[in-house]
Amino acid sequence: MNTAAAPEGEKSLLILDDDAAFRTRLARALESRGFEVTAVGTVAEASDIAAKAPPAYAVLDLRLEDGSGLSVVEALKKHRPEGRVVMLTGYGAIATAVAAVKAGALDYLAKPADPEDIVKALLAEPDATPEPPENPMSADRIRWEHIQRVYELCGHNVSETARRLNMHRRTLQRILAKRAPR
Picture 1 (cartoon, rainbow, N blue to C red):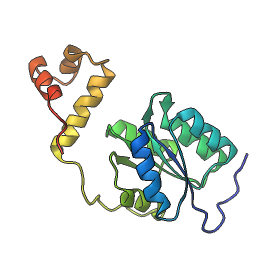
Picture 2: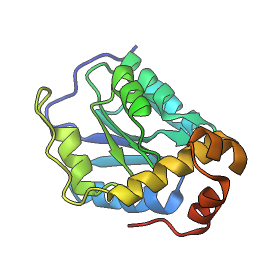
Picture 3: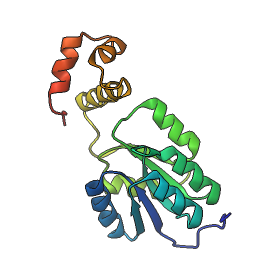
Picture 4: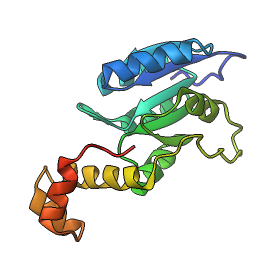
């Protein structure tokens, strides 16, 4: 087990996201800010890196096709307890934020997160209260994200989603047919 403290100034960073375009943009942005980035697209690849060469920092997507970023947080904390992890997700929900923090993440940001916000979260003092984001999601966008999350959890069943959201089915269908608000 590799539990040595991070050498002074070490900036090794793991990015885990299954969206290749977002992962590439984020990797470039964080490399330009001095991080030594390794970017992967699967939980399996990230878990392998966490076990063999755990980085000082990690930016992990919560939901991926082959599993959850939470399992990678646990692997990173096992092999490098002082590692600093920020979770990203397109589905902002209180329950998943709590689960991420309990697993050992420092912060939980909604996608698409600004690279500056990610760096601030990674480098924040341990007891510091995070600053509010420069461009937070609108209330309409948060509502839309929540509806999309429940719709996905219900297996894309409109009737079941409407029932769980206490919403008329036709209203839900109209919302689902529209583009995401900004």
